[in-house]
Amino acid sequence: MRYWLMKSEPSEYSIDDLVRDGVVPWFGVRNYQARNFMRDQMRVGDGVLFYHSSCPEPGIAGVAEVATAAYPDATQFDPASKYYDPKATPERPRWYHVDVRIRQKTRLMPLAEMRGYPELANMRVLARGNRLSITPVDPDEWRFILARLGVTG
DNA sequence: GCCAACGTTGGC
DNA sequence: GCCAACGTTGGC
Image 1 (tube, rainbow, N blue to C red):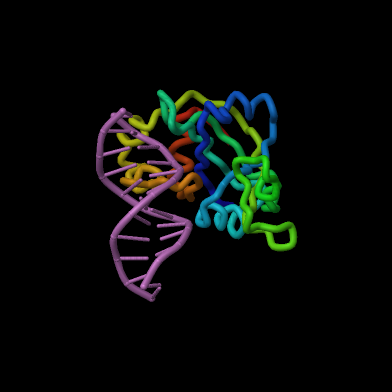
Image 2 (cartoon, protein in one colour):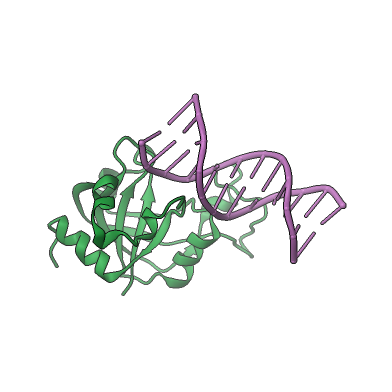
């Protein structure tokens, strides 16, 4: 069992959208490191911290889980999509993603609060200059955050 | 394979 | 809107 933090811009897709949809295909990732995390390391049932980025109140907004193994991102083949990749073909897909399922919306844990906890000081998402949209979360960090959010089990 | 230029991310 | 940081591209 692994744990992850996945960023989403709430103007594109928010925790409330995930509550409404239940499950969402995490399409549109165009970074090799993030793709490799999904394709090579994620397993069904892995824990996910749903993080709001590029917005007035960045921070953790809910808890979710990996719902499927990785599969090819359909938008890479669609010339009308902003995620279109002319170098990808159905025979040789370049981009993969998993589906993510809601567990629960939580109170927002703002970025500033996260930075205030020594227990989270090593989180990759807090590292200076970090731009990765998907980052691993240590089990201790996961447990600490869920406790601070009042999430049990 | 190097590396400068360019584009993107994302907090502030 | 600014700008630091970093990934990607492409000429050589």
